[in-house]
Amino acid sequence: MITAQAPKVAVVGGGLAGLAAGCALSDAGFRVTLHERRGFLGGRASSYQHPSTGEVVDNCQHVLLGCCTNLLGFYQRIGVVDKIRWYDQLTFLEPGGRASQIEASWLPAPLHSAPSFLRASCLEFKDKLAIARGMMALAPGAPGESGESFLQWLQRHGQTERAIERFWKTILVSALNEDLERISVPYAMQVLRESFLKSATAGHMGVPGVPLTELYDAAGDYIRHRTGAVKFRSSVESFRAEPSHVKLGTTDGEAAFDYVVLALPFGMLTRILPETSAADPLRQSLARFETSPITGIHLWFDRQITDLDHAVLLDRTIQWMFHKSRLLRRGDASYVELVVSSSKSLVERSRSDIVELAMRELQEFVPEARRANLIKSTVIKEVHATYSPRPGIDLHRPHPETVWPRVFLAGDWTATGWPATMEGAVRSGYQAAEVVARVAGLSDASYVLPDLPPKGLMRIFY
View 1 (cartoon, helix red, strand yellow):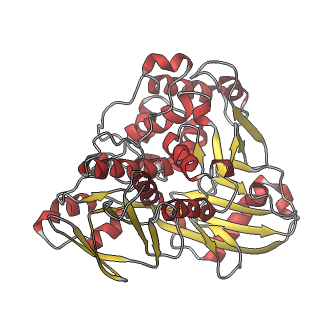
View 2 (tube, rainbow, N blue to C red):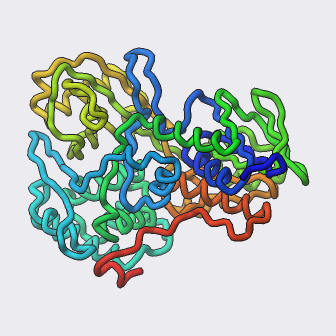
View 3 (cartoon, helix red, strand yellow):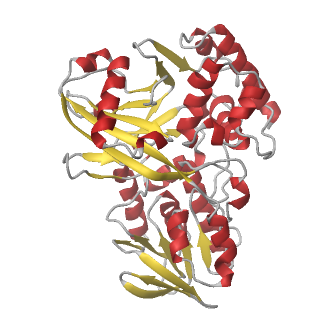
């Protein structure tokens, strides 16, 4: 039970990192006040009513995998795990519409996808052989950071051009939101081992069956039901750390808290750091980070254009198609979202140019789209979607603790051991909550859940 004497914690930021920290600390008996500068929760994983279309849209499609233990635990905590739709098959579409399905079989990990992989028509036998050699090199574990990019690693390990374009690039650009020549080897290996090699369960893909903010409104309710508060349109502009408390300067005025968790994107955090020498090391670390964009193209048609719920699209600018009207179970017409990760080439292009490009490419993959009428469309560019996982950046990812004993950090860019994913964001929030709880005297506080255990032959390597 939370009492009036319970420590007061401010969580700054209503994205997944802040929500995870707020929910865990509420459970631990803290009085939590969450400040969110916008009018809805979810951060970069949110939805809102788009003004020009009148439709509720996600700012970008987000998916999760079976290996995301902390994200799934968070969904169970706030009671929304039943709103995720799970798939055990991935469809790869080539221009012209030819499809290849990748799915698990009865074989032990890491061989569970081998039969469907061997049948896949989108790759030739020499490509499959090269990929198999690459996966064998990945299975024992990731080397330390050497400054080598993953593209260099692939070339050094004899990967064919088609294998790079249609397999490695397809997976990793979507997962890490960066080009292969800018992805560090440990990041790439972590993604591939955790999601592809570790077990069949690890690779199951979950897609929210509701708009994203519906998921995270439940987290706000969770905090409120434990005597916490969620303040919308409340932007934090400064903080001042004192020995016994922290004062936050917000658009609502100044307020004192026993502890503060700053769960902000690194660019926003830089703007509120005190202009003191104590903040210089953190400021210098944050200056090392770069961002990479994601673009979502939302298209509404007057009829169904495909019976696929989602598909990977090969060899073109667009990388994924999500059939939102099927995922959300809405109507007989088609609403699709097309996703371009690491969309640097689209940032400066106009909405009309991007829609024209998307329509032209979609019609190559889905012929029925040529006969459908486009009713409306919009383009959402998340210009600073994630930090760039380039070689060497891990050295600059900070831990939750700061030079201010009552101020802590959370965010998918902190030192979680995971890349910029929803899983990484939740882990960072739990890590920050653990440190706050320990500083407050709860020495056994533990919120971060263990990784999914390896199965089959992969147990040899863990």
